[in-house]
Image (cartoon, rainbow, N blue to C red; front, side, top):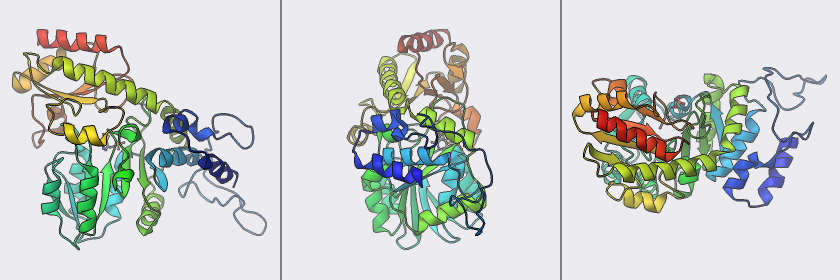
Length: 390
Ligand SMILES: *Cc1c(COP(=O)(O)O)cnc(C)c1O
């Protein structure tokens, strides 16, 4: 296939990830030499008169040509063996758990992406998975929780929503592998710009591509990247296909377009987040700034060793006055948009305790900030006036 030929040609020359992303791997459209790819909306592909698939393709639930470039780009940015896009981050993450069988045991963080924690409680346990939740960032707790032979998957998220606890991926991989389990990492907040979990020993990397990878708050998408093309990976491909968790071709195209500016966006968002974190660390109305780039953060040493370029665009502020203080502050913000999600070009703020409800382990004085591409001075001024007026 022409795409594969192009792929091999590009793979021979070692270019830096920024270059690969900016050029979308440098692929040209085979038919027109267009520098951006076409979108393939077709659901079905013709067979020849010998009834063979003319282009090796049959039906779009199996695969779609619009995925090729974005999947190869993500594979290369993560240093993996293969990548697959999914209809959402949740579709990608839950496929990893669905690849396990009833009676299998998994270890996952107590505080993690809220939807996935709920899914593990509501569906994972029902499906027969044994789940042990451990404090995020604590590799000793993972080591105490794994049951050699029974534990098939150790799952972690680093930095972890919304306290931004950092886990030592290499240490967690060693613990998982010793127990005979694989390590899956939700790397949504880190992106391949800041952390490459496969190089640190992870077996599967998951992204909510809705967030930083796409980066413009206009696509719902997910992705998995594998360290090896093994039986688990084939199972994941089967689950995507028969489970129908396929990404729309237009969304795949938008995702590639978003990823071409990934390095620029994440670098700037990390710089602004660090500036903001430092600025409010000692503010009288701030109880605590949670950001892995601050020396006061419990995960700082691991983050400094494991993360490159910066510490990410996500931070949380714990404000004085408890829940009421947090809600008064969020009300007074004018530049930050009060909305869920993260990783877009516009800055968002969220009171997670309200969103997650009474069962939430998130402190009720916590405001989660997703730092966008605005002038950092405007964001700082906005937080300052909100704290003054709250
Ligand atoms: C948003 C998010 C998810 C879920 O992804 P969707 O694309 O919304 O399905 C999973 N993990 C993290 C860390 C997220 O931020």
